[in-house]
Amino acid sequence: MRVLFAAPAKYWPAWGPALTAACPEMDLCRDGDPASFDALIYAPGYPEDGGPLDFTPFTRARVVQSLWAGVERIVTNPTLTQPLCRMVDPGLALGMRDYCIGWAMRAHLGMDRYAQDGHWRNGLVPPLAQDRQVTVLGMGELGRSVALALAGLGFRVAGWSASGRSVEGIEVLAGPQLPQALARAEILICLLPDTPQTRDLLDAERLALLPPGATIINAGRGTLIDDAALLPALQAGLGHAVLDVFRQEPLPPEHPFWAHPRVTVTPHISAETRPETAAHVAAENLRRAMRGLPLRHLVDRKRGY
Image 1: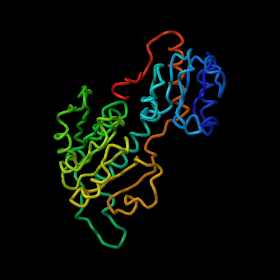
Image 2: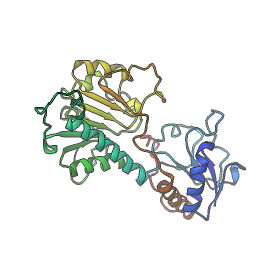
Image 3: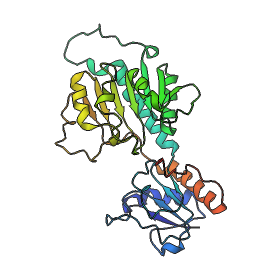
Image 4: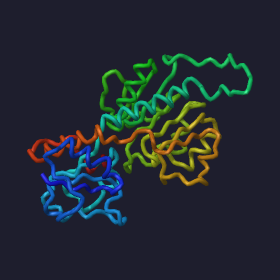
């Protein structure tokens, strides 16, 4: 099969060898006649002249396999008529699990309360995990992984998703129950995709539903939280916000998040797609496309993910 690597050149040194090793029967190319390709492997930023990719000439392509979990930058492309598959990388899920557990434990244990200033604060004893309520917004592959890991540590975990689809071992609240999901969230972990329904989901009204002192960990999409509402919410009693994703990245140096004492900025490192594991996911879908088998992680264009 002939496949176009439709991704920025900076990704080729890592992804080219990994993809070729995972799928040696593939002829992986960086350019060529669009009509000659059976599939595309895509990442945002291609083509590198800044314009959107025109998928119209790719008349033979049976699948467009995204290298990223998020597909909001391609799913609305009107020329894209080929099946689109998002990346569900086991390595990415493990990285997200580790990030969210780390920051949730830091919030739970109150690690930042113990300033190294010579004062003996032995009255600041954290509760047990079984006494702490955590809510995970978004119960896809990443949300389920994080929720189950935290439940395994003893936290009282609930999930929320628009559909409310059940997850064994986790209480999952459905769309209209978002207020209840927020009201219980001493620690709120946000892992929702970027869709018209999730943008600014956490506005001033919904942020006010969180318990006093609550911690938000947003590792999903920067559009989920209304930036203009977050800082007043922190002033009004929200405890802390750990933010890994933003509307503009890199986050400008002058942005008020950097200087706020109850905001922690991390530079979009919560979960990275890892070529050594993700290449096998892409290879499996390419083989399925060539054999006419159902594709894995096919994007629902109406839902946007």
